[in-house]
Every structure is written in structure tokens, then in C-alpha cells.
Length: 345
Image 1 (cartoon, rainbow, N blue to C red):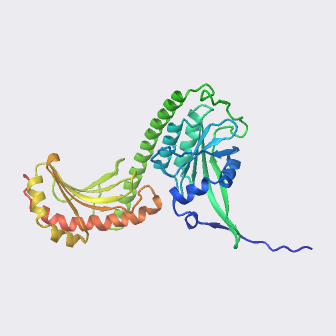
Image 2 (cartoon, rainbow, N blue to C red):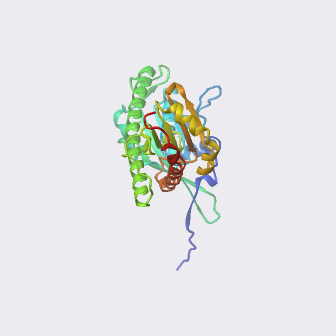
């Protein structure tokens, strides 16, 4: 009997090879051998387009043409789980170039983004195609790394469908003029923004429900308000014209806590607290932002944390622990001082 020595497949973290999306990963994707592998997964023959002189704010994309009919194919690259900003960039590429094939390559697709690509393929005509692919790296022992593309979203019946015929001279596809395609893509992008807003609203409510549950189950003395589909949650701090707020930014990242001094008491209470800013900062243990906003009849005292992604559920537990610590610190520092204010202003 013939004996074989078998190796074990090992998956390699993408960031160990490609550190940057804009430079490392995009440069690799633009190679002919990489486009050949991607083309096999898509059942397309791709040729890199010379984009010298073409100005775009989106540096991480790759622009190709489909061999045979010359139609544009735009590729958006991502080394993390998918997010809204990269999909927006993909649509912007398509609108600028009047592309008919959009390809999104990422380390991992969220179910929401996979559903979005499937929806785009359903509502657009057959001449416009959206693809989603997850990229992986594999090797056996010390063998060379082997990239693998896994198709997670494609147009309905793509394998059975013939490529659309294109008249390059007139720059039309299946009877659609560039102006009509651009209008259609704009409508798609508008509908997409509405869908993302609905998804974000639901995620916001779930985020604050989770924070409320954590505060209650951990025995915190902080009493949260009602979780809503918005990017903040209010907390009582001992005065009807002042409130303490936890907030997040799901589009750009970051979380924070702030004290808002509303109209009526702003002049008195803000300046009273501001005179004690050194002592208050020492009690809370962080550098605070003090903002007087007379045009809005408000004053704000804010603490931000930038290295946080509230859309990533895996980070919620750590973020909510941070919120508990800072909300309690704010309450201890401000409540005794606030109770000295005259409730009538």
C-alpha cells in the first residue's frame, strides 16, 4: 500500500500579508494573476484599466474592463467586515464611470450587506450586476500562500446568463444610455441610504437596550432612560434643565458621555461649573471638553472616546463597561454641584 504524507490546511489572517487596503491589498488586486483568480470566481475575463489622469477621492478601488465587450468593472476592496462607507464608494465608482459590473471584495460580509447586494440585483436591470466575494488566505506548513475567493452574492441566474452585448462606440448597454444608468444608480443609492437608515435605527435601539440591561444587571446606581432608535440615551442628573447623555457615532466611529446644560440655566450653571473645571476633571480622571454655546442657549461638558466601533457587536460589552464607569464618574462629580442650583433659574 502506498503511503502519503498529508499536510494540514491553515488559514492565515489577511492583515499579516496586506497591512493597508489602499496600497497593499489594492496593489495585489490589480495584478494580472489576481484578476485572473477573481475572474474565475466571477466567470468573467478581466483586464486592468489604465486610470492615469483619472481623479477620484477613493484610493482603494481597482478599475477593470470586461474582455470582449469593454464594459467597466469596478472593484472595492476591504480587509475587514463590510460597512456602509465602502459600499458608498463602490456606487460612487460606478456612477463616475458608468460601470455595469460592481464587485465588492471583503474579509467578511455582514448579513445586512449581503442582503443589500441581493436586493440591488433584484431591483436593477439584467445589464447591471453586483457581486460580493469574501477573500481568504490558506497554506500548508511553509508552502506559498494561496488566496481563495468565495462568492457570497451574485445576480440571479448569473452562471446561466450570457454577458450583455455592448456597443462600445455608442457606449450603451442593453439599450440603456449612460445618463439613464447614472440616474438609475442614483436612485439605487438613494434607496440604499434609506435602507441603511432603517438598519441603523434598529441597531441603535438594540445598542441602548443592551447598555440598559448591562447597567441594571451590574448593579449600577445609574438609571437609564428609554432605549430609542437614535444615537443617544438620556440620564437624570438631579436638575430638570440639565441632563447627562451617552452617545455614539455609528457612521464614523466613537462613543462619548456629555452633560448638557439647557436654555434658562446655561449662563448661571455653565459658568459655575466651568470655574470648577480643574477639580471636576481630577474627580472624573479624564480631560474634558468644555463648550459654551450661547447661540444655542446651551453649555456642554463632553468626554469622547474615538477608538470604538458601535456597529461591531463584539465590542459592545467593552464599550458598555466604559459607559458605566464614565457615567458613574460624571454623576458623582456633577450631581452634588447641580443640586446647589436654583430649580427656578
